[in-house]
Length: 215
Ligand SMILES: Cc1cc2nc3c(=O)[nH]c(=O)nc-3n(C[C@H](O)[C@H](O)[C@H](O)COP(=O)(O)O)c2cc1C
Image (tube, rainbow, N blue to C red):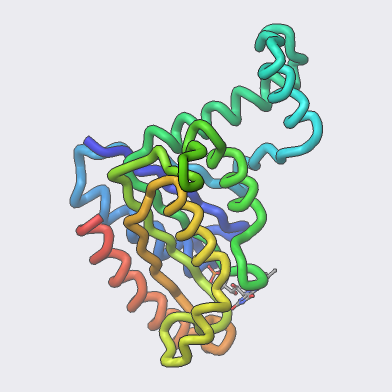
């Protein structure tokens, strides 16, 4: 049995979001074709993500310096517990599904905040002789992304270099050992009327369903 961790990082709801709609089609197909597997879903905009700020860094430092969990303030305990829960789930998962829109050529900030919490030294990577070495192996990830412009379904290779969120996610996951990475892109939404948008969304949803069967 595998555990699939679905990270929804989209402020919209399914009814109005291409990425979330396609993401749901992926999850439904995955469930139908991998009925033994466990699926855990986090909706980062509904749940919120603890921000790494000075109090968060201070509480880590306190623990490193020998302060016990019980000696931390109530707020520090809540923050650390949530963080530890997210980290444990991330480390234990076998497969990852990230669903997000492109914002200013990057990922939405809550996805970056989530990654800052779960990708941490000594847990997901260690300092090796020749640089960072990932500790997560035999895992795979898929990124379902929607965007106003077209970066991948184009002959202009330069456009793909502008999609820094997707290439960052791929590089970061690669650094922790998750090297099997696939992107599914619902693109050009700013230039489509409603019918064209629905038709394109359906094409990409079919692509997502095929990927889900093989994931
Ligand atoms: C704050 C913000 C920044 C955005 N930046 C970009 C961008 O850099 N490139 C792009 O192609 N689209 C950009 N968009 C457009 C969204 O990626 C696009 O509308 C996408 O289709 C939204 O996701 P959805 O289709 O799932 O609703 C941006 C939208 C917002 C709200």
